[in-house]
Length: 73
Image (cartoon, rainbow, N blue to C red; front, side, top):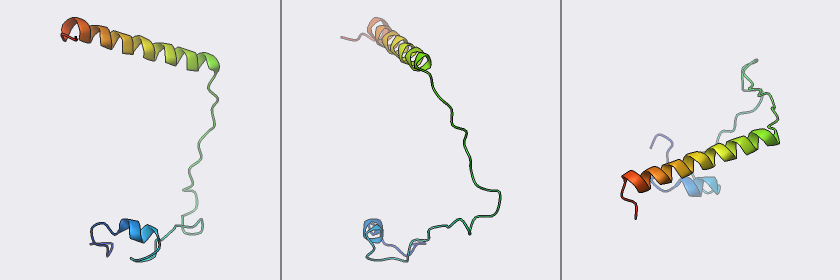
């Protein structure tokens, strides 16, 4: 109700058929020095392979523990 919308009217508002206009902030509206900058980092193939291997090890461990102690199947 605080946005002058009834239940289920969000879709209609997005389609531009009701509610108040959606406020989109512009660059001028933001105070100076508040922009977020994120450093781009490169992920190596070795790091991806290590994470995939680690994920599979933990997944397998979880399934084995469930089979042994959880009466799986």
